[in-house]
Image (tube, helix red, strand yellow):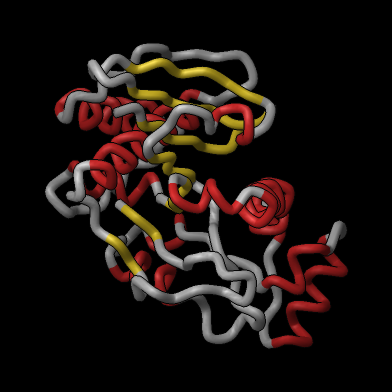
Length: 224
């Protein structure tokens, strides 16, 4: 069984692939599509499934924030589907406000990655079987006995704490630096790779109703 996890980075995606023997391989790819072949499950730190209006938000996001006290802000508000096509923040914010509530700049910067995942799943329905939405901070909280890791992942202490958690759970980080990716992007990809393994083993937890789908038929769940 081969599984993988992916986290967005400035040059594309950091992908951690776990072989059947447990060996980890971490690479940077330009597009997510090139990393999908041969996988049983692929956990991605990016929203899958979008509501048609910003209010109410996706149930899985609300549940995720409740599980991350002190770290709830790490769960970015997902835009509604009509806003996703906007290419300028002012345009996206104005449309989102007309539909219910505005969208912040940080979330807007993720639009290209969101569109990429959404387009992939809509154009290749077979990938809906393997691609699952995950969240690194939920993954780390699970490794930490259900308690959120409150240290900042970009600071030395936060990086070291997360690296120790991964190692303790059999996912020792095999590489510290990769061109085009930050150190914490690598750890996040490894963390959601563990989520993919838990999904494959039938041991993962799901947030959001099992049968909930958006207007394009995509699930709206977060796994950890």
